[in-house]
Image (cartoon, rainbow, N blue to C red; front, side, top):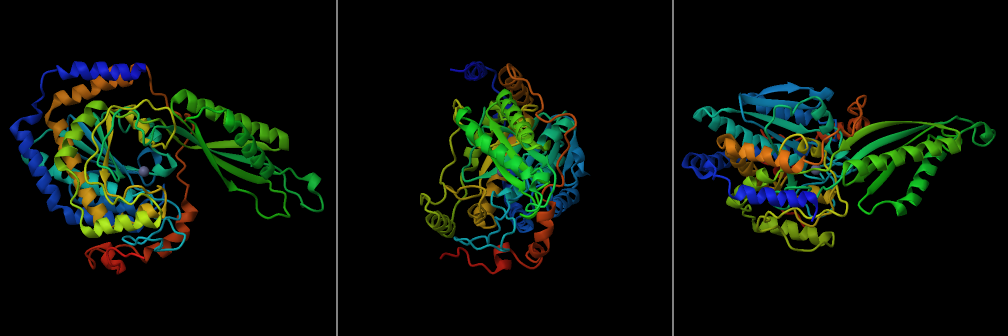
Length: 526
Ligand SMILES: [Zn+2]
């Protein structure tokens, strides 16, 4: 058993004999029941948010329409909005209330390149060919968090409950490109608890290092600079930056065999030169270096830098680099997760219709995945497993090492999909996403009430944070002091597709749902 696992166990045992909290006191329970009823009353707004953001289909750092839309809803409902936080044009924070505790909600906004897809259709059918789309389901997160925040505000106002609510967007999560900057800007300095949410096919929460995104990473672009020449008449005068990129990639792939098994590293060539008869004077490659802990991430990154320099030396070129993203491996809080799990079980899975199940099974069949439809039960909370192999990353990891935090994984998507793919967009503006988001909002609201009304729980969450999570491991940013948010990312791609996508923006004043606007029969099967 690792030292961390041992500490978790000791903490859990000590906590079991701690005095019972006021968690089940009648006022809290009555308020939770009311919160659930209020979330139900907002179902139309929740559905509209899911559909509207789906239709915007904005890539990381280009979430202008999405941010304008969400902040307008929050402002209209009495939240104070500060825009452009941490030097990121599309980032913002919306605040309501005053005093302790300070509860923050966070969830992503951005989508996936080339994942455009008609909702409710169980085969590949892009809305706009080649365009970005919500092939991760990030369009549903704000519907979850904002619905919960509006309900909480109403109850806090009426009952005179002290505390502050903050709502954050996860900008450019797909580039793992903002949360370290949020932390550096001090946005979470006074926050007591962070309730993140993320789309899933499960209804679940976790503590410790989660199996679904166990890794941290550094995302870095290497720019090689050579010398142009006529590739046929005077190639000896040229120095090819593309040669350097290819040598770096080849060397990395040889070295891969000798790296630790948990590492994940991948690259794309973002500039391979202009045309064959010009020796490429500029070329660039973009790497993600993923590992399970801070020292190993740094080690992998240093190795990448060494190889880049070596490739430059071999080719007579020079190299510069830019860090465009970073993420700590997340660690979620046991006390917050246990509190949240009770609310997940209380809410239970949405009631899926035959149409929902038919769509899910047809899509699973279409991609030769296991045909089991939608899940029928929430996932039990289990102690964290010893993580020995890699997986994905999420830059909320940086927040989780500064404030007790969890991710609510709410059931708004279909199981057994590959991720980052058009298939993952199919359910995301259908009743599956609408019902899953409503269920998620209920849990967010109830869990926030637990922490607003039970100061002892806040104290216990911080006790876990200090005595278990950060006892051995201290946070240090993976970004350097001079690194800046890469807010230019995706600009050209978005400008190319936005005029076409705009024709399909959802108009809730004319159509009840986005499916109705697109004239899609639900579900549409092959
Ligand atoms: Zn995500």
